[in-house]
Length: 416
Ligand SMILES: *Cc1c(COP(=O)(O)O)cnc(C)c1O
Image 1 (spheres, rainbow, N blue to C red):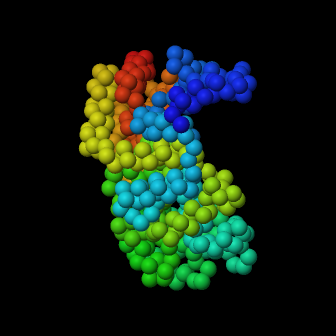
Image 2 (cartoon, helix red, strand yellow):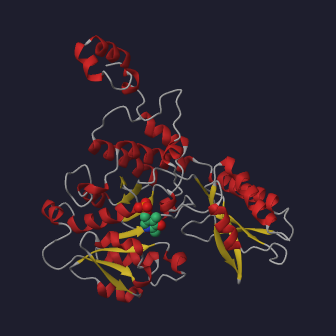
Image 3 (cartoon, rainbow, N blue to C red):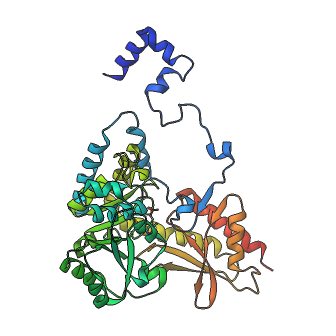
């Protein structure tokens, strides 16, 4: 039924007036429930006294991830007015995303942490509905997931959530020897190299080869590992069976969404362990309809974006801030590019002569945070010198000068 027709029939029906009386005006019930009614603009930050933060750092979960782009908001808003069958929605979005990501199958999860739970659960249960019901308390020996000892990290609790235990190995030989009939999966933490400054004891190719030889599903967590965009394709090409990326990091989708993709049989098993089924292990990790559409729109937008231009924009922002802050005597700014694979972004390192500008970088960082608006930056090291680190990739365009002016103001007021 067309909307106008529906409105008309509702207004004629005697019941409708009773049902809707005292509620919002009819128009706002039927149209755009996700938008504030035209002409009113509620500032919920203000109403609740929540501090608005400018993110001059990187994507961080506690700082609400990233800002969704307009096309993502459009996908969320425009799909909020109709129901959908969630199985169909997940299947159709998954099929399309698999095409986009050059892999067999894909799904939307509630973040990369959920993908770790579902990927592990899928590797344990396959299509077995009894096992699905028993998780995380399968009878018998606990399922084993192999990880390099140097890759152990906070997020591997998502793996043990399924009841699996983690078996630590060091080097290809130990990995091969650790595989037994209880082994269900092997997990590779892609950013261990830059989180922990280690060298992988088993490299990507060896890891995949050992898994394939022993028929063990391989899973790689690359949650924060774009840019570069090529990383979205890299790991399935190497041969990993499952890959996860966060939706709410630099892909800039909904914070509580993520991607799990790879082998079709495993993705199908992962879906069975997820909402909308009533009670499997992934049911509490539901993704709503709007965020599914939002995740799809974010991925599409990310893949279609001009990444070179985006990178250049970031460099231009750095130049702009450097120019403004550089007017304070002795201040030096240098572009720093984090090597990745996680958060491989350019940022601005700033330092100065502490005899002239009498404030430590960490104290500037604190002053930025305490100020209005609150600006979250960071401190880093250059040799044995502390530097102020200003990230630019998550700034709104109108915040670049705000950050620059504020840093300049703090440095100026500390200048002798
Ligand atoms: C952020 C992150 C996660 C968790 O991702 P969510 O999308 O927030 O669930 C997992 N692993 C790594 C390496 C991460 O950086």
